[in-house]
Length: 152
Image 1 (spheres, rainbow, N blue to C red):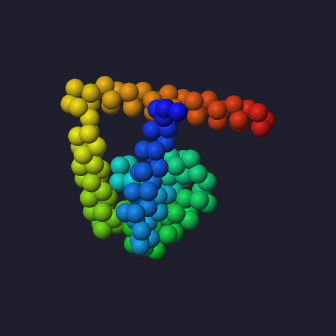
Image 2: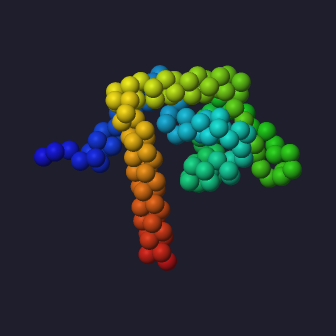
C-alpha cells in the first residue's frame, strides 16, 4: 500500500520528537518545558495564567512546569507590577541565550530540510504545508467544540 500524505506527516512528527528527545537527553528539559521557554522567548515575560492559556493546559500544569524551569535556572518568577495575585515568568539570561541558539539551529535546520526539495518546488511546498496546518487546526477546533457540546 502506498503511504498517504498523512503517513508522511506522522513520520515527520515522530522524527522531530525523536530528535528533540535526543537533543535534550541528559538535561532537565522536556518537550513541554521547552515549549514554555519558546513562548517566553517569543512573547517576552508572561504571567502563568497567560502561559496556561497559550499552552491550553491547567494553571496547575503550568505551575509544575515553571517550578521545574525555575529550579533548573531557566526562568525567574517575580510579582506582577499591578496585579498582586499574579506572577510574571521571565527567562534568565542563560536561558535567553540558549533559546536564541535554538532559534538559530531551527533556522539552519529549515534551510537543510528545504535543500532536499528542488528550488522550484519550495514555495509550493511551503504554501501546501501552511494550508495543511490551517486545515488541521480547523478540524481539531471543530472536533473540540463538538466534544464540548456533547459533554453538556
